[in-house]
Amino acid sequence: MATSAVAQEIVFALRQKIARIEGTLPERLARPAGTPSAEETMVLRRHGVTVVQDLLLTGAENFDTALGGGLPKAALTEIHGAQTRDAGAVAGFALALAGLLVKNAAQPKLPVLWIGTHEIFREAGFPYAPGLHARFGIAPENLMIVEAPKLADAMWIAEEAASLKALSAVILEIRGNPHKLDLVATRRLHHRAQDSGRPVFLLRQAAQPEPTAAPVRLVVSPAPAALRWTITGPLPDSIGPPGFAVRIDKSRNALPGQFTLEWNADERSFEERRPDGLGSKNNGAVVSAPFHRTDIAPAAGAVLAFKPATDAAAPRHQPSRKEHAAHRRPRRAG
Image 1 (tube, rainbow, N blue to C red):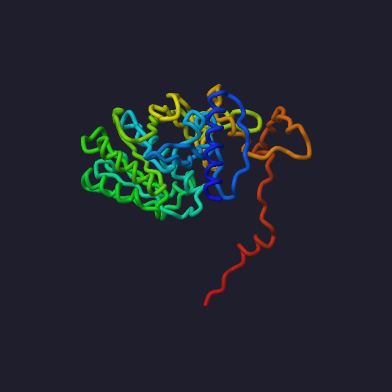
Image 2: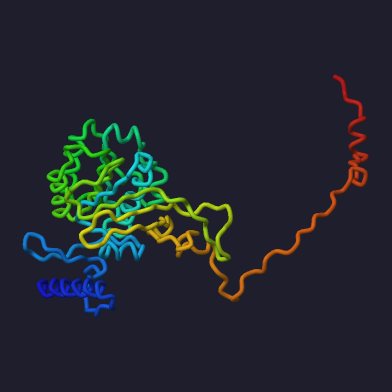
């Protein structure tokens, strides 16, 4: 039974891949209960054996399609920042991916391990704990931060942590293009992520692309925030969700592409920005539409201001007779 289920998964994933190439709708198959959908799997050849790999769906359909269905969960993924000032956008994008993992995980309380050196945290700062849960759905107690004195220590910790299934994700943040982080070192990280079934996100500040074992490399930079949308259209002088300019620089299953994504903190999902640049397609009303009528309330008409009352017309305060008597009543002495 298990062999038959795996065979159906492989055939279904192959049909999905062929359909994406031909631009046709694939035939649907009956799926075993409890197995991930075909959109969340990828067929790979590993050591001569065909395996089905789980994918992380970001919610942005065109972006996921360009990646071949999504980001691989059990793999090393590089997230680059071309300049040091892009470190905030790179870190926010990685935290959003970690929030997606926590949202869709069977055990959402598995912690996220963030590893960096003294240089990294002095330059870019630490993640802001109070905003983790509100923006990304990550409880502050579920984010473990390791500040290593040297790069070699940070890499050793990342390799050991990548083989643990007790973590939901491992984030290793480095700066530039150090010689120690070569093709052999990234291959070790990638293989350990495959064995544990957990993702490893390699954040690189001010780095240049170089050969690594990561199947996917993304270049992330901040995008200008668009206007927030309501049921009547864009709200003037407002600030919409955080925007990320994401470029697919390397992928084994897709061609390079450029996308502008917005993070929806309420849905904990990415959304693509509208073609007109005014906001995401799904960033709609801030209040629900009326269900008992089709039309919205009409706009307010002219506003009239009444002339304020003058001091002469205003009634003066007149104390009562009791107040006069109380003020004039002689006080007892002794």
